[in-house]
Length: 184
Image 1: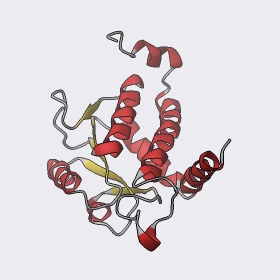
Image 2 (image 1 turned 90 degrees about the vertical axis):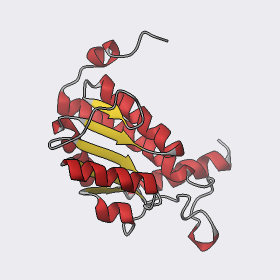
Image 3 (image 1 turned 180 degrees about the vertical axis):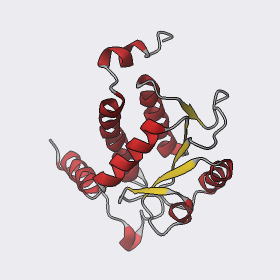
Image 4 (image 1 turned 135 degrees about the vertical axis):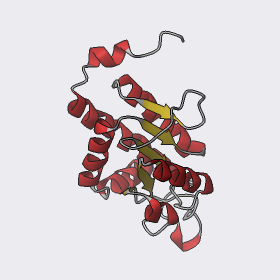
């Protein structure tokens, strides 16, 4: 394996090694108990969120993606899960306010614990990785460009969360596979 591969893997491992697993468990319990789950993210973070929403669907959980025509309304007993790595994403902040006003529990994944998104959320899951807000000068911590360290960490975090949720919901591999689309 080349040095670049090893460096990138080491960086992602170090980020995930600093994620508070008890907070991950808390978020998984909230998701498992939610009446409905709304997910949101922009750009490459949004791609990771959509992938996670797909796996939540495979688990049999009631999930929607903001922006899709089939996104249901959220309210009391529901969870709004959004990603705002830099912690100041205007669209995420607006949607967080809408979800809170409707009575949903708001969970944010961010790299900025002092950001506006973390202050607004009911639950913050800190992913201590470089984002677009910290990819230049002395703040730069990753060999990966721009927000790739945060986005890569999201992917791995979500895969572990799927395993935790699988155990919490007693979802079988067969049931998950049966929910996979045949419209490919």
